[in-house]
Length: 318
Image 1: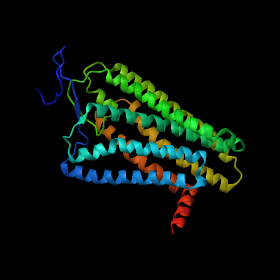
Image 2 (image 1 turned 120 degrees about the horizontal axis):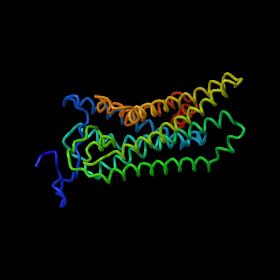
Image 3 (image 1 turned 90 degrees about the vertical axis):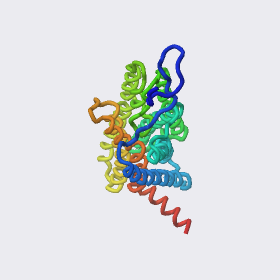
Image 4 (image 1 turned 180 degrees about the horizontal axis):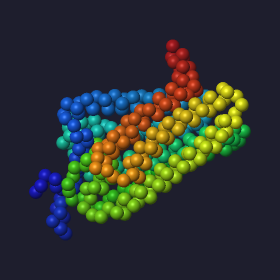
């Protein structure tokens, strides 16, 4: 039996059912594995600390108990979950590249990654809508963005993201996997897992493309429409200080939107190239490391209210 095949023999054919996978990760030297381990461990630590500080400040400072920071706290939870879903497995594989991941564990990792990706897409739309109402309809802001509305929007994002991810996973589970079992990625990314299926995957790819249009192009279009109206409203603001504050808040959000949607669209909606697998690994680092790490720094370094909350907290500690 080839080393590429593992599992239990089927009674209906001579194929073998895969019961675990090997994540190939980054195809570099063992010495480079140690360098990557140190770098990724450092970034993961910054991700946990940065998003943890954001969550702590929003919880402790009553001045941040507003719809904008409510959605920001949801984004921080998603970023921590994102990183924790993929990074620990990656760090373990950098130290032992032969360690397998079970079939069930791989499918769960795929589901959680898709779920958090969908939720973040929708949360970014909710945040753009919040900024649109705050800047374009300031007198009606508290009426429109009530706490009931904010909670409903957040719950909708989590529920819809979870259900859409479940559709992808159910379509994945209907496929037979009979070898090989090496996934050329650092986590169980759905496109990489599909390449190992022993059946036609046209339906899976079609659903992925349609879902990408719906969850990427649709939300990105809504964000851009919101910010077109926001830009017009900002330019009509008479106060220079007010215009600067509005630009600062919105530019932070646009940085996050550009990083997230740009890398996602390139990954799922562009034709494959000869080096697409290696390029995809680099792009997915944005999801696992750079986006979750940069988000709290983008918001905190460019937002005077967050910096003020941190300053007040430090003064209390002294």
